[in-house]
Amino acid sequence: MMKRVTWFVGGVAAGAVGMTAAKKKVTKVANDLAPVQVAKRATGNVVSSGHRVADAVREGRQAMKVKEMELRARLDGRGPTTLADELDDVDTVIVDGRPVQAGQVIVLRQVRDDSRRAKKRA
Image (cartoon, rainbow, N blue to C red; front, side):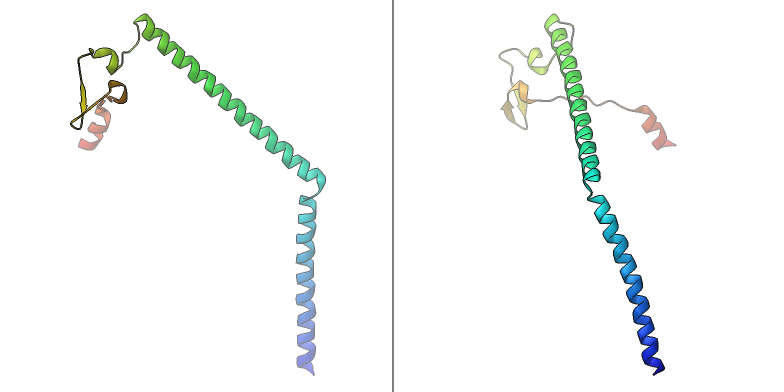
């Protein structure tokens, strides 16, 4: 008889704990899905999206200004020249043994970093 009472009390205790946990979870989800909370989240999403769009527009305008200054400098003869500007009409650019248009070539200059080399020696 004591075994039955022990198992009955254990079951009641487990049921009470489970019911309390379930009630807390249901209450939290119900509060999260309340119209006020949904509206707050939607407003926050719209505001953050607006900030991202504004940042993208700002970045695009900055890039446009930089490119315009570069093109004006090149037009005035002050800016850096491209490979196509340096070549005559009869010159040919060969990459990997095949002729290519000068506009398709990107020339990168290697810059030596003496501080990195000094660290390697030490």
